[in-house]
Length: 530
Image 1 (cartoon, helix red, strand yellow):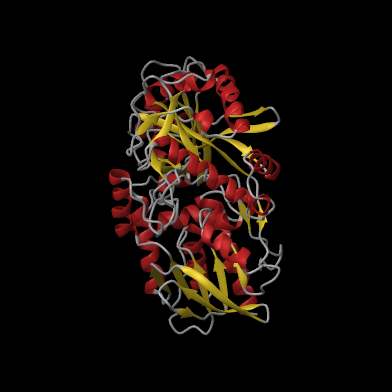
Image 2: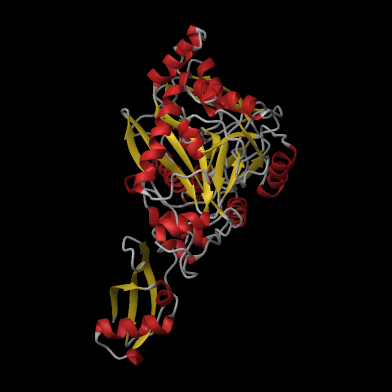
């Protein structure tokens, strides 16, 4: 017999199998000797009480029958080396990789082309960016095998259950090497140090079963005949042919947006969010969230999620990284972008989070109007992309070059004061004291000023000059949407072009991108295999 049961445990109890078994025995009214085994199905932390932090854990318990380990969903890949149908997948991020795997399951050969390098060689370019302030525009924190998620934390939670089967995606990550705990934790996280091995295993599986994965193959053009893409061209002069094209290029592939715009292929400006990344000492966050001076060793580094309406605008935290590091996420020289990531143990001394303000077309139009910018840019479908780019360039200038980031202490930022000194910061290229009101548009700067004070009232101790505000967090999502038919998922003008995931405006993270990749692959399979 198997039973599902939930327990409320102290952190120290939650990591002792003998104590857990004792509580299970009491709750189920059975002798411990009749419990043959158990495993966790859900786990979350309840830190609302100031007296005691609790772990809420659900278990699958085996009683008087042989214990069986959790069943990990397998993937039924088949040899597609000689398949009749072929699909070009542009981009080897989570959407592209999961789309390729799903195509192989359906008997269709994927040809994955990636503008960047594989994960091992990509790491060297990141080191050059961090240490020397030199960015490779094709291999960086956004471009390369695994996409932006590989080296930006690996958080796996999403609210997008309507987009697909979240559990399937998590199971497949475990199948390719992730720890089983991601299947039951409320906020599953793999870690930047472990994701590359998992991504490599996915790539190897695609190749083993007859697919192709080609690196440093940047898409630069394509030929359309009778509303169908017949050929795509890559930067090295290759011309590739396939029956369909999945466009999974990520939120930072501005050259793809510009290519579509130049070829009069429909794209749309899409609202997104822009702001800063803020970093606190992790010990301070732990004392705030866990109501104690020192975090219990059985508890993970604490996180937070904050949101507020300020002057009719959403101000909210984004991609919070406990025990994390701020990283330079630029894709071009003279543009400064920061992001955050955490290793699997989340054991760095700082906690960082994006803190951003929602931006729409009216905001960008008014900004360019105030700057006396050209009318054609303000009226373009690339309006919000140009706005994003303009702020990133201002941040680069304010930092003084080599991706040194402009920064202020938090209270100084809100009070409009210059920071005579800055606290220690995890951002490796370094930070420089600057007046961020000269970098950020007025509506973003002022809403953040007020938002920080509001958040300080919600979390006593959050609003402090021990925290540093670093500009600019601007790649929260794509500033462009590539439209697609709701049923066929094809672009309305091109019958075999399938815009996909974050870069097309249909996903917002690793899991939702992976689900969208599978969704598109399923639709293609249904069309080809009828």
